[in-house]
Image 1: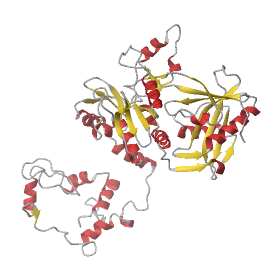
Image 2: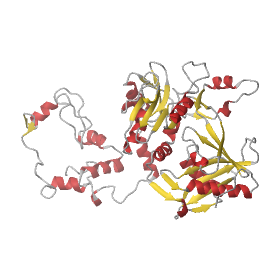
Image 3: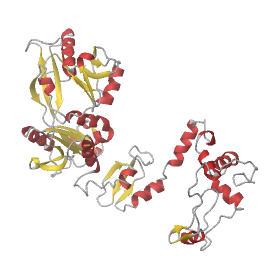
Image 4: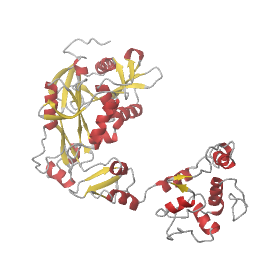
Length: 486
């Protein structure tokens, strides 16, 4: 019998890889179990020098342990750190049967998996074997000494390598992260190490990947305030707002300035700087949309279309609009009375404009833009103007006297509305959400109830306020000016 023959059933598989598959499928044993139980008679070989465990490889065990590997080198003919002769030196699969057999086992019909596919059951089984145990996750994290792993993931389930919650041993701050961020990227506690964050660095590296020069954490542009990522050639600043450090106000945190983001916006506007302000939950959960916004602000989109080459769709379905906005708008889908769109020649949506009846009635019988978005990493030249014109015609036909819209000052100032017949009628002032340090939630979720003021409801829920610079309000009343839309 050859070295590739099964000692249990005398079946010759031809190579060791096929033998391992045979042993597992036919006899329910791993190759190691087979080697110890059958080849070695139930006694696992140990180091010939000290008797400790040795490394298993290819149906055999090393003769010496790692500490005494030098004895194995000497027995194998090493002199001065080099082998006298390598068994396969200068040989190829053409002139050596062993190499030829090894090469054949990895390609074509020689591969035991050739012509087969995994079932859903085997995929699930393989996935389970690759998962790290809770003990292994914990040991990798506690090796850092400054962190500890909590026993529940962010959704309350058992933690996995891609969804863990860790706690800083020094200040007890907890946050959601991944095993790679902690063990490979060296992620630090943001409270104990406030000089910068891993994600802020990733924003800077993304901008650099577009071929643009970046200056990190500069105070020379809107002094004395700091800009996290400054792109001088585009006069664009990018702020990455980690929700833990940029929230407060519930417990009279005197270090928290509720108007900071507003003041930064105003200082940037006065300096002729376009400032983009992103929150950490947006960057973590909607990275592609955030990157698309940055590409658009930096003039680095990869696709450009002309509105005149697009078809106008005045009745986009709710389902299609929802799918498009969830994939392309930072705030996702919102309720709408009507949905207009521009379609590319292949039928795909390139832009969507959604309209709704506003809650605010102070501006009369007007319709409001609830969402307007463009296909990610794209720009449709003239697209906004064409959709605005179409929305005016729709509003007139449906008895509305004007259109109301808001421009989120974190991302822009709404110049497209000013250039299409809208006038500025106000400013919402500072806006706010509530956060637990990981995600933001609408402030109405924590409104006063049963005589309990909002601040007490929020404190009981363990959330704090996080503020934004607000929005600019634009209005177009049809009687103010003749419509010039076609």
